[in-house]
Amino acid sequence: MRQRLLDATIDCLVEYGYAGTTTTKVADRAGVTRGAQVHHFPTKTDLVVSAIKYLAAKRTEMAFGELDRLRESPNPIGDALDLMWEMHQGPVFSATVELWVASRTDPELRRHMSATEPIATGSLVEFGKVLLPDHAAHPEFLHAVYTAMDVVRGILIASWATRDRAELDARWARGRRHLQILFECLMREANVPAPLPG
Image (tube, rainbow, N blue to C red; front, side, top):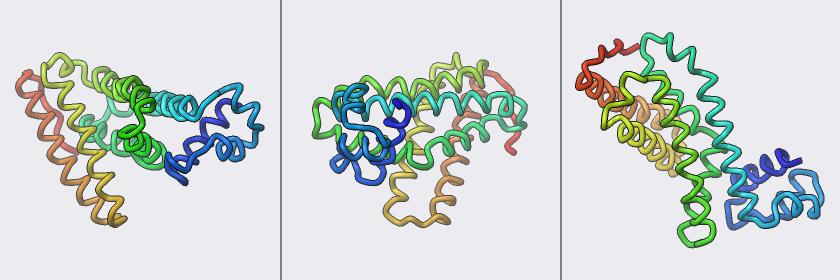
């Protein structure tokens, strides 16, 4: 039942936005009574913050499920960047952006999001450290991973204005190329042989 409520919360955030998402709509979408919803998640904030934590865990599980494939790749950096891009597609990212925007004017939500966001992004950083352990000790590695996330998120948010898939793909190809250069420079500084781009 909890999972149905969390999935329904994400669906409502994407369809109605944060302001239009109500606990009643979530309970209806999940097919549960309001009493059952309140038992698990007493407030709307409880619902949406729990949903983001749930999605962060799913995103981490997805990433680590690709670990063996990426380790065997001739271009693990490029493929890891593509995986980061894929993980930000669809309702998960849309729902997260809804909460980022809403937290600007909602102090309670902002307090919860400021605690939850480092957990969500930290999982991707940990994945990068496991995938590229020889580079993780570089003092700029963490910053490079965060820069990659910022590039991915910025391109996707900007694309909502045009909905042009060809333009989106071209912007990601450009961003990926420059991010690959960034990581390869870090590897050269760390005296680690860079894999050839795939």
